Length: 371
Image (spheres, helix red, strand yellow):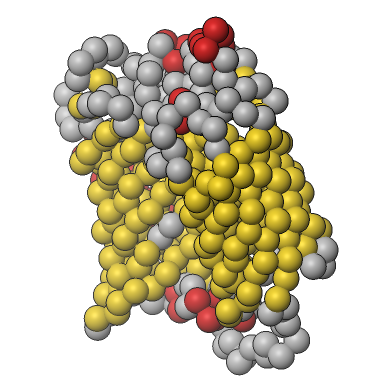
């Protein structure tokens, strides 16, 4: 049988022939469509689950060029485009080395939003950083075929990549890509070791819109507060080991933010988490929550970190130290990460994950009051 990668390279050529009929001009200020075809060079997971095999697939990406309607945050960050992507990976050949079984992982399908950051430009070649975040559906999980790496079919997907692009003409670019895709469910189902796939690929991008003269944007009307205070609440659950049930938590946060720039704020505050079910040694299998196991109803920590603002949307990340945590295991520090979207000047929707070292505790959804 021929190498599947040869087939996807042929598809790349066909794709280029099809989109060449589009009425489009220079990509400088144009929205573009890209097809990126990939082959994995490494797959790995946590907790000693060593993997083997090759995954094939690709991405179809729509790049919304921010230069056409520039905002202060995108201009200050130097973002080239806001991206919407569909990612597919054929995972039939990926298995665990210790206990291989056919079709163990199932194919994966992801829908994500991302950004393209230009890093270095030499002559016509440009090196870009391409992070993305979204939802991923895995074909198999622990609850379908006892795959210990993937705990559920619905997962969060996080990608970080580098892309070297070279224009072929005013309408078309070719690129070489290297990226890492991680997916896991944030602890909603356990086991949840998570899967990481490192891939290389080749891409072809084509302008979808005509180039236009862009007026110098007026940012005077875009204002933001230098100082703000947040008060947030979220509710979520962590899965019970090898069971579809879960143990609920309520998270509270109160903190102060200082806006450094249009796109960046630094914040610090207190994280309090209430356990609806605490750890009971006499009910170990039912109440054990790994590094998140607590003998008390409350844990309390103080954290610091940045918010990356893109208009009304912000990505949050903080590193914290526990002031009180009566834990089963010697855990003293934690991470939080999440997103918030401002509905108005005082209210935002939020989603937040709590992490101990590299292990997700739980994902909470809720609201945040800000002033």
